[in-house]
Image (cartoon, rainbow, N blue to C red; front, side):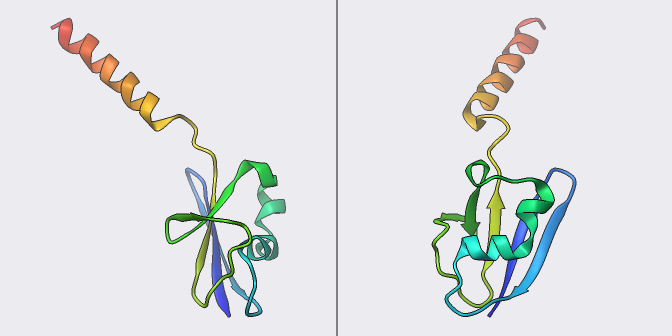
Length: 95
């Protein structure tokens, strides 16, 4: 079966096209892609997704699946939004 493994950074995207045996799980596909070694990833530093949804490493893959290696967020999205709003309030109140 043919699947893709994808890892995206701010400035690049690495895609590995793999031919794997039926019944392969997501973590095996990531290991077969070589991206763990290439980017110095450790198991605790990323999660996996398929079609934008988080999946367990034991998720069985289907033909055509695109396994996404998800990095931790650089900042909490809610806190980043609050900080932007606080910044806008200061600018608008000084006008």
